[in-house]
Image 1 (cartoon, rainbow, N blue to C red):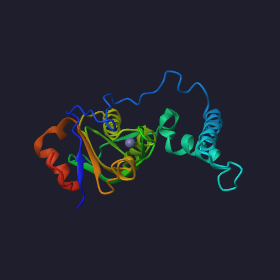
Image 2 (image 1 turned 135 degrees about the vertical axis):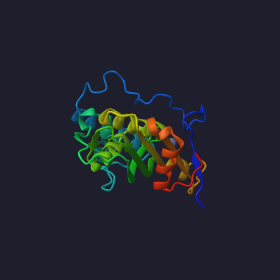
Image 3 (image 1 turned 90 degrees about the vertical axis):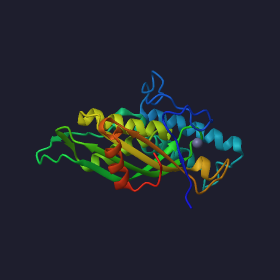
Length: 226
Ligand SMILES: [Zn+2]
């Protein structure tokens, strides 16, 4: 039996794992002063130091390439969404077919990283919107989820960032997102609860209305009592 932990955005959450209050990723002012290539070089030296302090023999063939591999992975893959240059292009189209119901993109893969422990957050996102005259290519929704996932994250902020980005693109408040994800910092260390997952949600505009919210939740068949 899967146990779900639902985090309401109205609650003030004081546990050390979840204490985000802003929807903006906290970046320092000069975050992009140095290039990604320079960042890779610097991170490589730091990872080398960490492994050395841990007592690993960096001359061993299996581990000698790890610092560079990890540095490249940080910048080019798992944290590539920090740099706005990697933001997906999301052109919209006119809603020519006059489709007036909600559109739901279900089961979008989420691969993110918990910013408190730098361990994976793995799950699925369900995103919905009701067109206000504009529509967006379906795969763009997946790309937006992926872009904001590729940052040190907390799930609550990720949920909000996805909704706010789509609200800006589609020029409507009528956007919703539910994320159900496993946090390896909970599943594989600390309390080591391998079964639990965390559900977060953000309902904008019409999705705050009971009937609309219910229709969306019925589509995604989430067994949670909102
Ligand atoms: Zn964590």
